[in-house]
Length: 448
Image 1 (cartoon, one colour):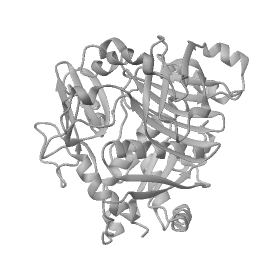
Image 2: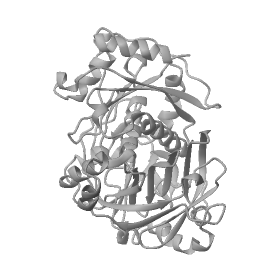
Image 3: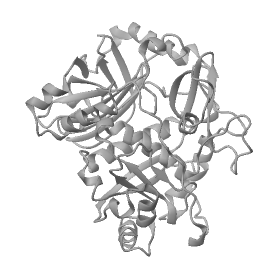
Image 4: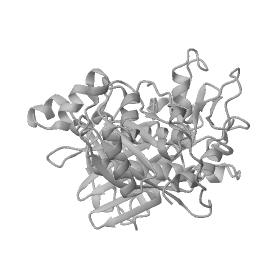
C-alpha cells in the first residue's frame, strides 16, 4: 500500500527485521510441494530495449509513460511455474533478486477449473513461537503473496522485506515483476451521502457464525476500458485479495465477483471528477444510474465498484457507512502500478463503505460514532507502524509523527491484536475490525 516499499537495509533495524532476517535460515525448507522454486526474479530489464523489441506492447508503453511519476520503479523478468498455483499446493517458494529464497504457506485458495485458480499465503517463520501471546496475529500482514492464474498467465503481487513486486505479462507471454520503492500520498476523503435522498431502514444482518458473502458488480466507464488493465480478470483477483486481507484481520467475509457491466458513459462529461461521476452512476434518476440500478438488481449485487481511468493521484472515493442506495465505490485504474495497488485502493474504499475512517490522533476531537472506527498508528523507536485506513490521513498532515520510517501493516486496526508484539489498535478510538464485524452481515444482506 502507500509508501509500503522501503529500503531493505532499514528492515534489519526494526521489529519487522526479525521476519526479514530469519527467512534466510529457511532456505533448506523452501520449495514447493514437489521441491522446486515457483518464482525466480531475474535480472533488471531496460524498458527502452523492451520498447524497441515490442513497440506496440501496451504494457511496455504504459511503463515507459510512468517513468516520470515513478522514476525509481524497477522492472525485472521472472521465471515462473504457473501450474503450481492450485488448491492443493501448500507451500510456494520465491527466489529474490539477491538470490535468497523465501517460502510462503497457503492460507486460502480457490479453483474455478483447470485454467483458473487463486492462491494466498504468508511467509513461513517462527514469529508465533517467539511471540506466543494470544493477541499475536496468525497471518503475517506484511509478508504475503496473492496470485491468480489464468491459463499460463499470472497476476498478483508479492510482499516481502518491505518491497512489493507486482506481477504483469507482456503481449508475448513473458512475465515481469514491477518493483517500486515509493508511491506518493494521495487524496482520499470519503463521501457523506446526500441526506435529501432520504433514509431507509437498516437491513438486518446475518449471524457472524457463517461467512458473509458480499456480491460485487463491477461497472466500467468509457475511459476505464481504455486502460491497459483486464477488468474481468483484474477485478476478480482484486476481490480475492480483499477477501484474503479481510479474513486475515479476522473478519468473516467473502467478496464475490458478480459481473462486469461496461456502460456508455464518458468521464469527460463530469470533467473527470470522481465524486460527480460516482453520483451519476448511483443516481437512479439519471439515465446511466437507472441502467446501473437495473443491472445491480438483476445480479443481486450488494456493492457496486466503478473502475475509472482517473489519472490524477487519488485513491478513489466511497460513501462512508453506506446504506444499500449508497453502497458505491469508485477506484481509478493505473496500469503501471499494477493490480496490487488497485487492490490496495479497493480494500481501503470498501473499508470506508463499511464505515471506517482514516484515523484519530491525540488532540483530535472525539470521533463521530462509532468512536472506534479509526485506523491506528503507533511509533516504536524510529519506526511508525500504521494499519489499513490510517496512513492516508497521516501522510496529508504536516509533521505527522515527524518523518520516521513507516511500515504499513495490511491488517485493520484491532485493540485485541499485535504483530511482533506491537499493538495494532487501542480503545476507545482504534478498532476497525470491531466495526467491520458489526457491518459485514448487514451489507451482505442488502439483497436478502
